[in-house]
Amino acid sequence: MKQALIQTCGAVLLGAGLGLAAHCAADAEDRNFWLLIVIVACGAGGVYLMFVHTLRRRVVFKFEGGFMDGKTLIGDLKDQAQGKSANEAVRHYFNTDRGAVGQRFWSASDYMVDTLRTHGGDVTALRAASRDPRFQCDHYEVVDRREKDSEIHVRAKFIPS
Image (cartoon, rainbow, N blue to C red; front, side, top):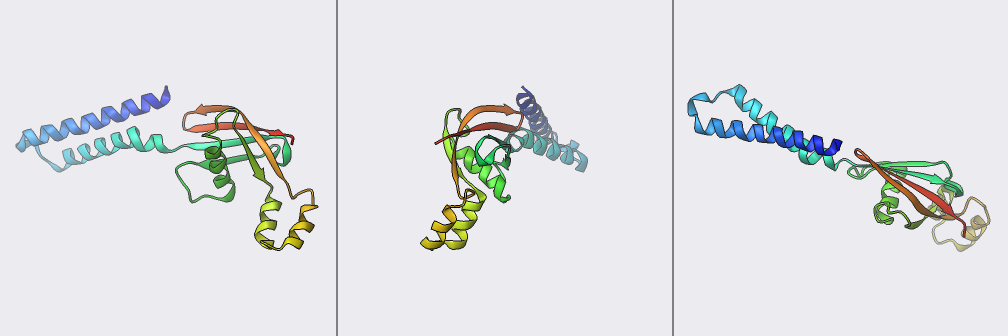
């Protein structure tokens, strides 16, 4: 409802800007600098509210169980220059068909990722590291998805394997 109201306000502003522009084009004597500023402001504000404002979407992933128990990952679907956890939230969102309930995915522990990055193809080092309980990969299932304004909240639950 709120999103529709924002887009309606954007359409009204854009319409006002276009109406003023048509008035200026028809009546050559009424052209002045301030009217031009109002036209540009109405048009820009309308376009922003109708299109740009709706593109900003945050995804919030909450985990229950497994090594991610209690963690929350937050990412912006529009901004890709984010930190590691934000990129992970966006990756989980797209890997689960946009957080569809029932979709399953896996998540590697930070220790596992760091070990693989550090040791690469060294099989002996990886075998030794794999005995550590922190070297794990857990499976999760999306159990709830809710949209609030410009946020998408996804709750994932650990699935024992």
